[in-house]
Image 1 (tube, rainbow, N blue to C red):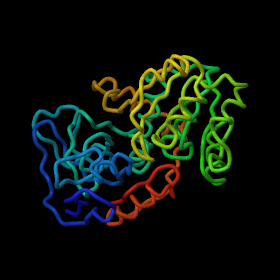
Image 2 (tube, one colour):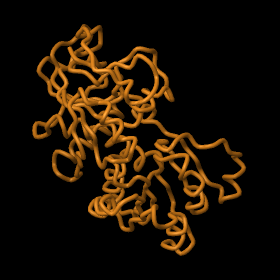
Image 3 (cartoon, rainbow, N blue to C red):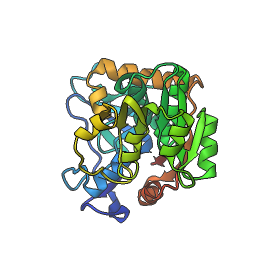
Image 4 (cartoon, rainbow, N blue to C red):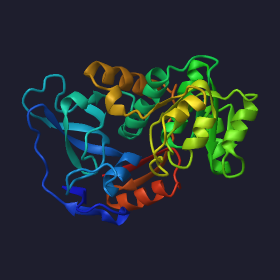
Length: 322
C-alpha cells in the first residue's frame, strides 16, 4: 500500500510518499481501508519531533473508512462497518490498523469526509466547552484562531449553550467565516490589539474563559484578557511553546486558572469517547453543527498540506484523500 513515512524529524519535506507493507490486525484491532484522513497540528508536532515518536513512523491520528478485517477479541466492530477514529497514529496511509476500542460507527447519512473532519477537532471543541471549562449561558469566551477547524466548531458549540463569543482572526475572509459560525464579535488581531478589544467589549471586566490553540504569541495577553478567577485553556501551540513563567503570576492577575488539556485525557473510557463522538457526529449528520472542509489533498501531497496548515493558509478542516 501507499503511505507517508517520516524517517527523520524536520520540515514538511520529510514527509515521504512510499510503498510499504499492508498491516494485519492484531488482537483487539481492526484493519480499515481509509477513505478520508484528517490533518491536524499534532501531526506537525510529531513530524518536527516536538512530540517525538519512534522513527520511522507513519503520521496522522485521525481517519474514516470501512472495516476490512478484524483481529481476535473484537466483538462490537464487524467487517463492512463504516467507522471513524481519532488518536491512533498511522492514518496517513491507504490502510491502517486501529484499536477497535477507538472506533466509532458512523450514522447512515454521514459520509467519510465529514466524519474524518469531525472527530478530533469536534471532540476537542466538545471537551473544552463541556468539561475543561463548563461553559454556561451568559458566560463570555474568547476563541483564538476562530476560523480554524476547532475554532469554528468551538464558536458553534458555545453559541448552542448561549454564551457570548469573541473570536480572533488574521484576515477579512477568516473574519467572515467566524461571523457566519456565530461569533458575536470578531477581532482582527493584525489590526487591533485583542486584549484591548476584549477589555473594551467587556467594559474592563474580561472574559470567563480563553480557548487558546496558538500559544507563544498569545499567551500573556490571553491571561490579561481574563476576568478574576477566569480560565485559560491552552490546548495547542501553533506559534510555539509558551515561555516558562512563575505561577505566582496567576494570583497577581486575578487568581486565574491555567490548564493544558489533551483529548486523550478527556476520552479515557469507551463511554466518554462514545458520548463525545456521538454528540459531534449526530450534530453534524443532522445539520446542527456545520463543518467547513477548507481543502483536500491527495495523500501523496501531504507535505503541501502541512506547509499550508503551518503557513496559516487554511480555514476549517484539511483532509488527505487516499
